[in-house]
Length: 314
Ligand SMILES: Cc1cc2nc3c(=O)[nH]c(=O)nc-3n(C[C@H](O)[C@H](O)[C@H](O)COP(=O)(O)O)c2cc1C
Image 1 (spheres, rainbow, N blue to C red):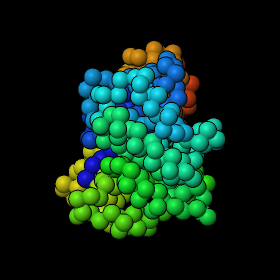
Image 2 (image 1 turned 180 degrees about the vertical axis):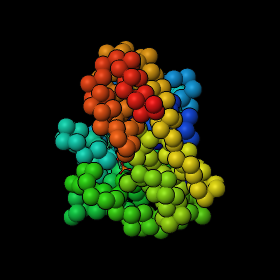
Image 3 (image 1 turned 30 degrees about the horizontal axis):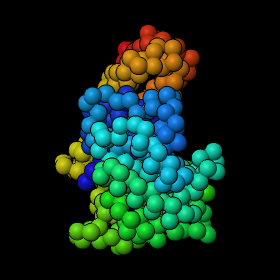
Image 4 (image 1 turned 90 degrees about the vertical axis):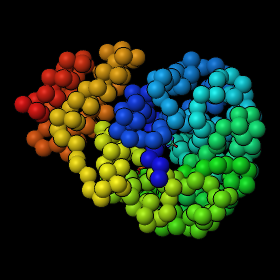
């Protein structure tokens, strides 16, 4: 049962990954990285590959439109220290999809297969692919897509049980995980590892993917933003049948640690601006926090965050 921090563009940088690992994420994934950007040696793209030395079990997620782009990317950077390469076949953002990348790959399973071949042949690393149910309601082709991916050499599959057209709205349609599991029975040695993604907002949601849907791994996405404690809670639930929730003191100290890590490499100005949405997520659901939230929404130094958050524990 693998607990993984999902790829989240704009969130799963090295600071968040370090904190998630501390709380029990067994694997983490970079945010999606442009294969074309790497092929062109874009400094901005390469910055997304940065990691702390203890960032082990790190999967690199790449997006791109075809095998040639991935091939050129692999020639341009050092992929050897990643434990796995994941192909993004789920991103619904128009800017990405119109290039043929992200969920547009679901319209072209042969292209996805070609990308898998390139990655397997050139790297020898484990290769996984993260995809959706299909492009839209009329094209729910995830089972055929999965079959083709595995035939082409994919070692692991992650299904996000929404269509491209759904974006992130509505609920994840969990019944489809059973169909995916039936296609690749758990006890068969040729079956890929199957990961579930969609609506993991509490430890119970993750546990249900293991117990009720037979998944091998779970990706924690929106439910882990400002809540890395969800990894510890899930592990405790698995092992003891119950868990302790994080205290307000722990939320405050972890939010400040997360901020300090971000400041250590983005600098105080940029990190303070970028981290507002993240620190806000740490205090989500905390009672009587409206004044603190107002202060966070304009905080521009570490001290301002600290002064705001400390109001919660006085
Ligand atoms: C802000 C945001 C950024 C995301 N970035 C990526 C990404 O870079 N790569 C990817 O495969 N999925 C990305 N996703 C999708 C998530 O990994 C996950 O599959 C999705 O949010 C469903 O899980 P959830 O309902 O538990 O949040 C992103 C989702 C969100 C909300």
